[in-house]
Image 1 (tube, protein in one colour):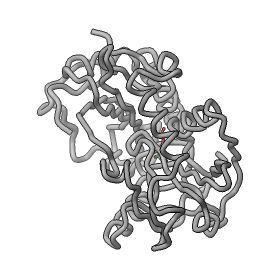
Image 2: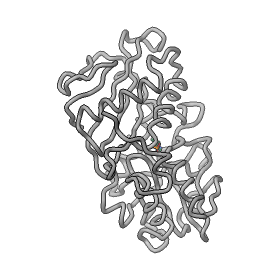
Image 3: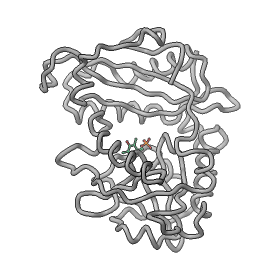
Image 4: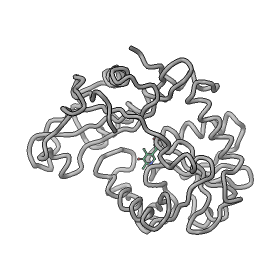
Length: 304
Ligand SMILES: *Cc1c(COP(=O)(O)O)cnc(C)c1O
């Protein structure tokens, strides 16, 4: 997670000096928001994937949290992201904007002051290179994903991720790579940090938006699936529909497009990356690396 500089409230600060106090209320109560973005090394230089959409979601996360005066515009954050990547000399990297608050130990957001930082670091495949190729092992978690009226599902609010930590840690300790989480009504929602798809008889299915984090990679995969001519259906999915799918795969900025080989010790399809996951993965990587039909639309080359 190291780099030369971190952007903090408008300044590029040397990495070691990018610190906040232990009494920062966001750290105690989990009110804050973050975003996760990737830049890729392309033949035309470093390029950020769908930066504007990610920054709009960052501002939306603050809106869901209830921040009344967000200190920066999307355009300010866009410039700051470019500045941070280029100051660190990165081409391919992960970009992490964070909203946090300082002030007093109150649960009233309005009594505290919002701050924004942007960190960048070089980061490989989140579920492993091996996973991208051969698929990963998953389990349906005994922890339920957020109820839409308990924690908001549309925002990357920091405190919401305690739920993901519970599910992910239990899954990994139990020998799996990742946890699939059901929504409070028992339908498949998403993973601890990825959206999920299944393929059956040539049709791609994915859970509808209401109870999930609306992934930008999910939207990209759906668009690429359309471009490639696959029918896509957004509808509620049950746990056993996963077990009898021809393919299951997940996606997110961190996990990119990763196939699933087993769920709860049941082999999914052929037990390795299936043809639809492979076609979408290929289209996705072509796009982010500058050689896809949507590259121009979705990539922003790093300035400076
Ligand atoms: C960030 C995230 C995703 C993936 O969203 P992307 O925009 O594709 O990175 C999916 N689910 C959860 C819970 C997330 O936090």
